[in-house]
Image (cartoon, rainbow, N blue to C red; front, side, top):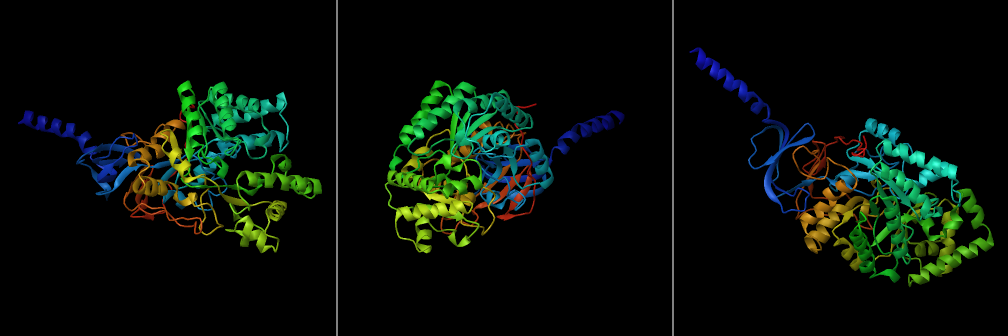
Length: 526
């Protein structure tokens, strides 16, 4: 009898670990799993516990606090948006609904040379705020330069360059994933390549990435790509070329040339990738219509220069020259997104605003209207100037990620670019489902494992045991972007469930109010 009891006790004790393993927080049942590798989908279950993926397989035998029936739905890793500008909008909508409803669970901030300067403090603030999305960030060259040189149009001294290097070194130690530049923005446009190379070398020592808004995405785009590749080569740093495109009607069709430059660089051994938003319009400051040398030293200096007749004449001449290069007669391609002094401008082109002001229907008068806007502090704008065939050709390049280039959108604020609401849904609906430019599996790889690998987010981007449980579940036949240029404030639809760090953040298409996001530091920095 004793031996039988002892044997039974041993068997029961041996079974206890197995019994413990049968519990999980969330069990996703019978979905079409696309794991982020680019491989084909397969049917299976996913068990989630403690913010991690506990198991993946068929007919998993787990007791779950919550079960999601995923029949007929795609189960994929949470999307990673590698090019965002959320700074300043985080606490306006901590739910980050414009991203969450588009399937995004992680964003990379600090792009185009603009970032928080103290990354450690920024991460601590994010820890206390608690967003619904995870946040990684780059350190922005423009803000580093402004901290040391202001908006001066000159090269740094040796001492000033050392101060800039120290700021970047501290940012990388605090967890930044790399260095970004915005070389069409003040003061980044005043920096020469040698300055950027020196700073990129610092980021490279901490396994960072060099992400660049290049000096030109229009007629001088080839020179700009060559500079980005030179920086990568000389600093021995991976390169990410931001929002890869061809701006200006005169440049349509050149994507075969520019993509080939990237392909050739990769064959040379340069770790260069690109990202793209799936639209034929860009969005940035209206100030980019003016020559950069006019924009130095702050708003007071800009206003003073633009009041001088000879400077106004020069600016108008430069703007008209650029318009002629675009083969256009009017500034109809430039549409104001947000102008604080007069919101009636929002959603109207410079051509339309010029007529509203009672001016003659001439390009020279429209240039004066742009100057007036700049005299009052400037405006954000949407620029219609890319070709659809170039968008598709660039999209087919396999080392290209998708990015919104957007902030956290605030519903009904201004007339922003619709990419801030619908980037990923648009890819999945228009370019995957409807036009079949790329496959579903390939699109998801570009939204997940490729950006995770590029930006050293080692526990993201794949559905794999032990990885963070950032998961999106959607209907591939119903996923749809709803935001348009005319009506930009509309959330994407079709994403039925979104999990962030194992917490159900979207349940049956509705945000639950859960804010389980966290700062993500460069995983290669100890």
